[in-house]
Image (tube, rainbow, N blue to C red; front, side, top):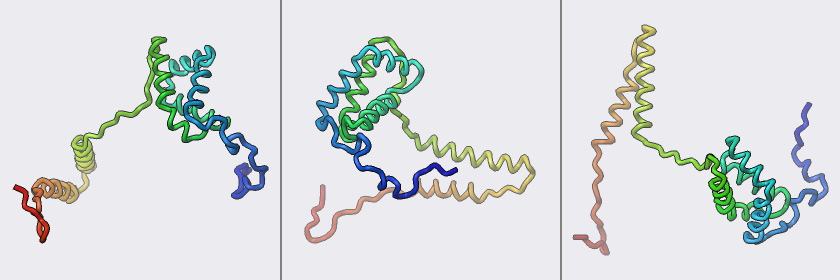
Length: 173
């Protein structure tokens, strides 16, 4: 029924049973990068990578998968993966561009617009009030009034620069 390991069970296994428990084969990022490039240039791997990109897998996820696989095999450490990841990413995107394949980068370029965020919150509050009206419930306007007062207070408070004080303070002209 419960097939999960119990706490401390890993301490009962033979040490160095996994490849990642031994020292890595490539400790320098340059050597690890060359190993990856040699593998990525193989025609079967290139076809597989391009197929995955065509199927909708993003480049970041693909790069992370390649690098994690190498860590599990004991080829290099996670630190080396972080160092060489941008180069592997660029190689994959360059290969996809050369093959004319449309792909997803996987890099999020989400920029929050706080005014839109605030307006969305206000719209949600208005919708709640309108729902109360539709259900013929008494309307509680206090939360909305408090929100409006808070916004007014934020606008009314101008920032005042303090002038330096003390023995060593200099007045800036």
